[in-house]
Image (cartoon, rainbow, N blue to C red; front, side):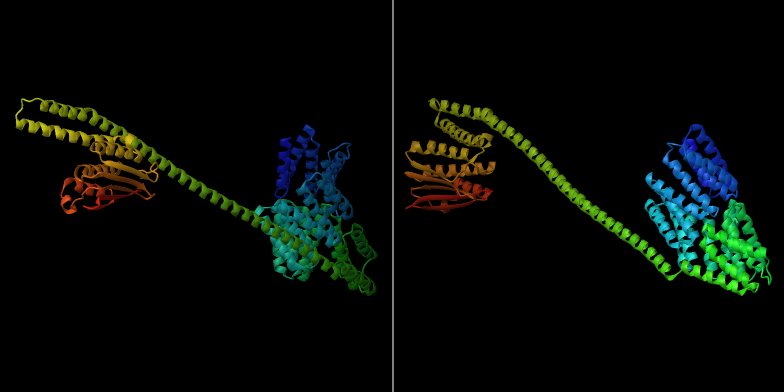
Length: 636
């Protein structure tokens, strides 16, 4: 089946370039279609073969295959597409043989069938055939309506070849209406597409149309150029029916150039070719032209009857434009022989029918039809443009959404990246803190276990030696110093171990240590003390150095008051107001001279530690009020 379809397609391609090859391929396609029993492909083969044979001038053979197609289409239960093929083929056959009134209903049936099977391209093609037939009948309004219907479909299908056919046919209608500039516009559109598609047969038709336009514009040289080009191509393609039209139009050019002998030769060639393809209407029209050119003073009854019968044949076939041309020729025929009454009679008929064919009302209707088509086309283009704009707007919105999403995604990536980096830093910091805690634990443990035990041993040994009485005074003094120094070092190291130990990192632990120290120092000396806490300290964070310095400043202040102030009471206040910690140590002793005391290590150490903490330190000491130390530590 696919092979038969391929041969049909090849035949269709060569129909417009090489009729011999087209016939050969089509015969093979028909044989294959018969062998596989495909009625649809067989009918398609018949319709193309009928057209090929007709164009080759083999009218009788074309009629035989048309009858085969008819018998196939009339079978009971046959595919509707087969019937459609028959209607289309019969319409073309009748049109080409001049039986226009028979062609019209066939094309209408073909259109209805194509619409039923939803074959848009074929529907448009049948609209073209119907429009061309109406054009030959002189029904230019109906011709234009059908050509515009076909053009609309071909534009929707984006079928360039179909569009070129429509432009050419619309041009032909305007030629008949003698609106040559409009005809030239559409002919130009048609031939551009045909050249792009390399449609040889279509170019022949376009060249004929251009020749007719320039003939109407009285540009005879240009008209002959186009007719000669068309004739040369038609001979190569063996398009006999087209050569009949070309020779007829060429003869008309030479008539206007007053070259009657050349015109007669072309008319005779046109008649012979028209008879070969069965185009009786063209043959009859040529016959009338030739009789009119005899310019005899006396005419025979036979010649007169031939002229009248020719007009009758044209009238019978319905080819009104050629009938009107016949009236003009027969009027000239009678005028040349001196039969002026008969000449006047046919002249009146010529103007009567010519006016009815091309009257102002028809011209206005044609103009409105074209304007309405162009308006609909523009409205459709505007609708498409609006749709495109809406699509572009939607696309822009999509792009905006995409850009926004991309920006959000990018922001999320950045945030996630920052979170990852921050987490990495936090994890690293936690690891470092953990490592520091482990290290601090290790140092504290080593100091306590190793150095602490060693100092304790030294202190104990010095005490044991002091209890023995055999030493002299110098040795006892030395041992006492060893005992005192080792005790001091043990005390200091105990503070350092306490500060280093991570378990004591909170301010609450510092406060507990302060209370413990105050109790251990002051209670044995019968010094009463109060320890007031103001504000919360659970969320206060101090660095290791600040915690150590805060405790040591407190320790130094309490220790000095206990040893040197001879006080009875000490008031200790620790206050947190959210931004800073205030430590106050106030006693009721006899005070001291700050200028003298500053030279000592204790007070100097207090000042140094306050400086390291970026804290402020205030001393207020007198014999009457005792000593008041106020330390302000910023919390950040």
